[in-house]
Image 1 (tube, protein in one colour):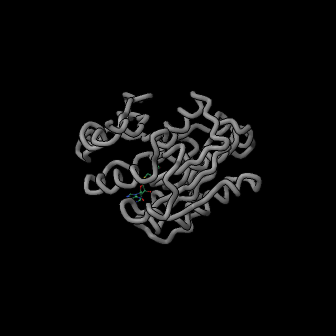
Image 2: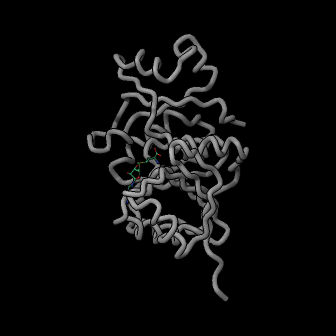
Length: 235
Ligand SMILES: C[S@@+](CC[C@H](N)C(=O)[O-])C[C@H]1O[C@@H](n2cnc3c(N)ncnc32)[C@H](O)[C@@H]1O
């Protein structure tokens, strides 16, 4: 079984995406095992020195997938095992969360906007061993538009840092309603940026159809992790 504690991620310039507007999510992602991270190339590396040391080689430690890492750490803490589970990640970006879910046994579909998919596919291929690749799928899914091409019975839905554009909240809810069933567990991790409507999303928009509880927080970074389920149908 793959252990999350063995993960260290770097984003490096092996970017296959050519859209510079999505550069930050289009970065190459490679997960290092602890063994590799402690090896000659990466030994004793701390975030700052790591960044400095490799800047010239255009290798950067990731700091933009902070939210994704909070979700990953939660999986670790809860010793999650996705074996036999059908999982979809929305707005996957580099794909860190979905990649881990594959490594933890899940049948996982990583999705994002069409222009992110090539990079996402590349990151998956770089990080998933051959035995797991059959359980990995990468697809374009634009919320509110493409969801009907997907199944409606996922066991888990993940979203890390995908709540920041109020104009998309309605589409996201439509997509969530389509992809989920009563027993689906949704995990969303967000920085609670009031000016981006995040608080309104969780307090006003989401409760129209879903129940949620905060299962983990990083108060100093204002990051909350929500466990979300569909509201019981009214009988
Ligand atoms: C801030 S990034 C977060 C990426 C990744 N989940 C992470 O935590 O590093 C937000 C992601 O949501 C995707 N996204 C935004 N609006 C979307 C939409 N309408 N449909 C599908 N994906 C969308 C973006 O392309 C991007 O990958």
